Length: 503
Image (cartoon, rainbow, N blue to C red):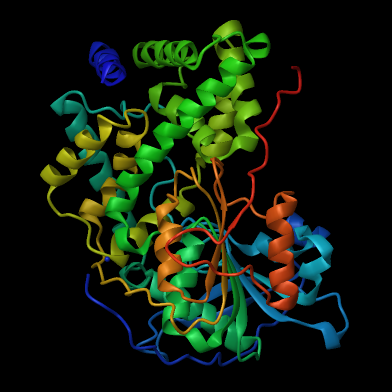
């Protein structure tokens, strides 16, 4: 609580899921096959990929009505047809992440396991190169935003007004019919349309983060059309999506403290303190200073928090963040922070954010009372002060979202023959408990846990223990033995924490 009080004091001084969907919808066979041509994505070009568009119904309940176009990428199998394993659909998560590049993911698997599949990446409806693509206010995540921490009623009202203005802009600049059909179920039906357009009866699926929820719903609605499925960092279907975000806050705060300890371990490199507590004090001091005066006129408390949240996501970014932190404190280098903010924050392109909201706000009804949001977030803030209010304002447009919310699917994986799940036990965005819950709902699932790992959705990443099991599964269908009870079935050590280049 002392740290919470300190952060509140610093900010004050600145002043400056329910009903069930179970019936499998009929697949809508694609009226036209995908016409393949050259790609423009550099990753796919380098990998020899091919790209095209697939027309799908805007509203699957009216298949002869308006159409939208999905951007699809493919890298075909490299083995003889006798060894061909079929189609592998992919999704990187978000919601709102562009997935075209994932067609190239198969080459990263050991033992050439990916060569046996046609890898399919796609931009989900509303995303990236798909048509139309959502955008509401590209400048919304720009500099000079109000402090995330609403320590005055005026700050709170300013953020609420901003949130409403973003939702209003989404209503004004996009077709309401598209906003009404951005739910997870719509994308799952799109996935099945891609499968049908490719002329296969079954497809495999490799999903990350929110992509694991797509896999869960696909396996619930179309279990007979799943061949194999890999889920990396699994969404907990019990908490879509309001409570899930509150749960994330706890993990984000825990993981940045692990990073503080790591920075302290390499004080000879970073010169920011020899203990995690000392590094944290320096971090908080900078956060307070930025609340008074943004560095370079652009790096304020919000940009600071946005950049360093990456430490809670990915250990592979720890050295980059440690270097930026040290240069900022010891050399006054705010330019590196500016570069990282623009790299990580999506400044100037709100497509991913618009789609994120369009899905999350309509998959399920969020609380309509701001009083509930206020109480829940201040309660969470006492445990997780760094990222709670950032996350709250990120989602606050759901209070005013123009499209009506639906009711989430009751995830039931009993019809899916086999699933391989991977999760690091200190994953912040998708807490490990979600993997245990989904394993319970999918009797054919096996879970590989990486105890103590804090990274999110990174397979394959050179961890032989994990990657070899993924490769074996994709090549043979063989899984580690499932153990009784609610626990992991296999354990792998996470990748070791990085070592700074100059240490």
